[in-house]
Amino acid sequence: MEACSPQRRGHRSAPLRIAMIAPPWYEVPPRGYGGIESMVADLVAGLVRHGHQVTLIGAGRGVDLRTYEQPPSQRIGDAIPEVLHAAKVERMLEDLVVDVVHDHSLAGPLGAGSRAAPTVVTCHSTVIGEMGDYYRALDPRVALVAISAAQRARGAHLDWVGRVHNAVDVESFPFRDLKEDWVLWLGRFNPDKGPHLAIEVARAVGRRIILAGKRSEEIEHSYFEAYVKPRLGQGVQYVGEADAELKRELLSKARCLLFPLQWEEPFGMTMIEAMACGTPVVALGRGAVPEIVVDGVTGFVRGRLTELPAAVEAAESLDPGACRAHAARHFDVPVMVRGYEHVYRRVVRGCRAGSPRDLPLARS
Image (cartoon, rainbow, N blue to C red; front, side):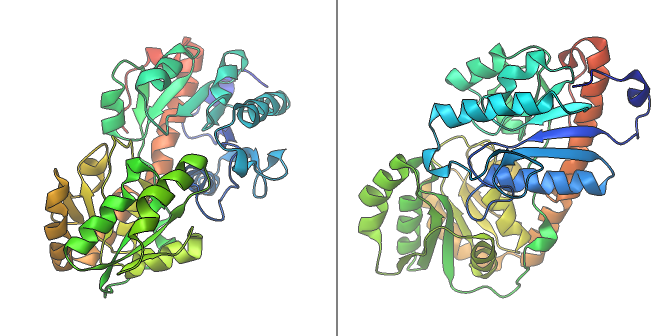
């Protein structure tokens, strides 16, 4: 891999050569579940539209360089597929001439210290506890990017170089002004996401609820069997894992998206997908929720679970057009692309200076 090139870095608007590293677990874009993979696919498409040269490395179809013919989705959480993916990526990078590496995988950043080009790492999950220790232990030349102000605040011990919100291709989500009379929960079946609580909220106001989500991991199966399955029936319908088409249909028709978070989630892609469809979000104000949902405009953000039933009833009064406009203004792909372009150019300049962490913090 070629090291920092002074000539290319002398031109702020010159197209960049970017190696984009996706996690190995799902295709890019994913057929069903895969929030990171959806974000990576949209980011790559947006960067290419801006004239940059992007080499996408991942698993399965849709990538330029493939570490797995088929993503090892059934082994998600196992260490070997993750580290094998990272090892293959390092060999592939040796044959590429790039200005910056953007790594979205977990193990991949461990090789950043031996890369000639600087590495940008987007932190997609928690940044406290052992994960926080991991990010802090990475090579100091790694440029960490937060996906929300809430995440950056919780990881105040880390040396961030910027914050860039995740985004979706808003135009790819159908806008629907007239909503149907049921509520939606969408995500992965995990106690942190609170689908069983969403059922209780819907029943408290006599609303039908549809649940769609991933339950491929053992913890998801166990949770579903213990907490969700016994609550099915009587106005509660589970439709399986939603692919891109079904997800858009459900999000556009629902009265509101229920988001009863039970942890400090650093973002929440389903919230911006719902708003892109003109559908308000009713959520507990944890993690990044308050910086994504405008209370009283694009949904309702509440502090207690007992406050959510009334918010579901009030959601009918909100303007779907305002939800769509907010998503387009703050969470559309061009906004995310501009944010990462800013980060890339700062990091490229920092490559010459010695470390991207020596630069002032970007507030993109």
